[in-house]
Length: 386
View (cartoon, rainbow, N blue to C red):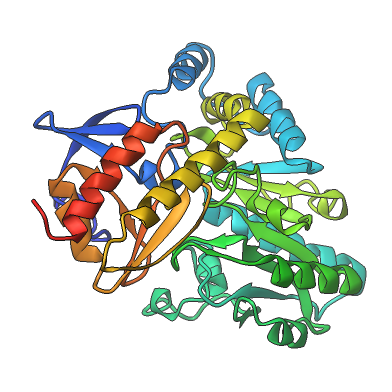
């Protein structure tokens, strides 16, 4: 590890210098097939022509302007994002954690304005992950993330995914919002399920609780739909996006539906860099590519192909395969972390999600031939081959 950095990451022994399509290249010129997309960030792969054009054109014009003023590129991005999402308006920030904090603030102010003090609890899910700030850690239903960092922001309550009885009990008169991942990523690519999502939507509508979906990892086409929650037949009052939204440039978004669209007023929230022109230009390039029914269908088809090919390999140590679109997990009978380095030596980059789960988040632009090549490497490594 480079000693200039704080010791915060379990780094693997490789240094990358460039990327091209579905591949990364290290300092020795060795090529690696990328099944991670920078943890769902490089959704259109590395060096996509639309990004190169967007970055070059925007960097020659304007990189940053204060949010005291309007910017044509940022406004175009916001308009395209609102139209693509079917939501009413958007707040732009820098990351998923910031987006989720913004969503929590909307839920609390929405309830305060209508019902006064006392309705400030936000219900999230056990196994969920919403960020690394003190508040988003408080919203994260995984105890190992909490160690050493308390006390946390109060007002969060956890229920188990799929437990509708616990959900009904939790959504009492102290609750202002729920915040769910439509597909939990960090706990092993676990879809929420239509019945549970539908029940949550029903109760939230009845009790005027904001239904909020964290689509940071699973949204923006990753599952083959613009939002992953769309497959459950529900609509969000608030949805958050980040990661792949600008294809590698940091940006986050809090999208509000009709009910939540007028909650924030001047001075309620802000972000110095949020939605800066460079991020906005790259976001436009992503939206112009991804927000196409044919492209989304292709993601879904590639995901089905990936999962089907992985299943057909019948690797003995793989105990379960789950996923939606190009968001796929394989549970192992042994620890996952050592396999990351073993695969790295064979030229394949994958992720873990929990102690015994491998996670695959390849770029949307990956070819079936590249999927085949990567799965051959994976099968050989998991079987103990060279």
